[in-house]
Image (cartoon, rainbow over all chains, first blue to last red; front, side, top):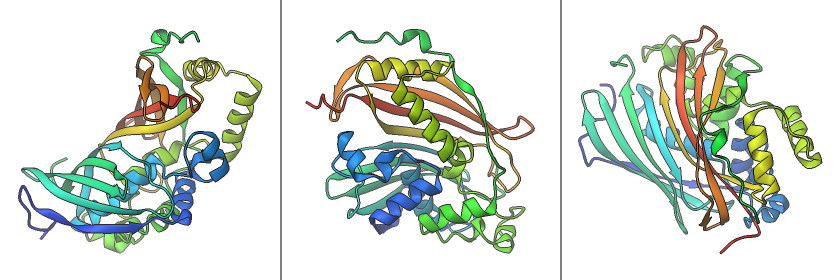
Length: 135
Length: 179
């Protein structure tokens, strides 16, 4: 068994991430992103947002995690197309939900939406293949 | 305000190829997976990774840009040059200077598309080639008036083999110009 049995319309279990300030800062620094909007609330306010917000690379990383939490370690992400909506701030709960959009041979396309109380923060399409599958 | 005409930048190499400061490595991978609280064992456990058909641990796919980040010292140098009005001699720096001068000083990323040709493994030495793909007309957005910049990034290994192709879009906006 490679990744869980699925078909178009299969839904992935929800992941509710409690985004505290430390998570947002740690993820930005782990990606070597030192832009002040990801760690300095005062600078973020000067630049037009009410607080620091999660970086796009961190959002991408959480989408990876969400998909491979479902596939298990035999899933390999082949591509992602991701767009950001409302920002993700400290104190938000980011709720990730996913649904299988397409199955083409061993390539499975999953739509992932991560939303907070203000609306969708991240909307992504992720193609995942089993390891050892056709590249 | 005179709007900058940035059409001449489209299609240009944005900056010199960016060569990773260090090889893909387990320490940076661990920092990332702990920050994302990701328990996928293929990032940290060679044996678990081999059980999936991989040669050993791999890097999380979204980490690809991390490997070519310039580091804090270089980041501070860029911010200092920006503050003092000094512009480095490559297309992206000149374009950002024009945007700064026109008041489009704030930045937010909006889209990323990445195609992963293979998983990165410790020892890979990444180089990234940046191209300016497009620049939008100035338009009113929820954050203020701004322009969308789209960059193409081609990541290759030390042998020149393709690792990841990326399209990255960001908005440069005037923080004082919210609707």
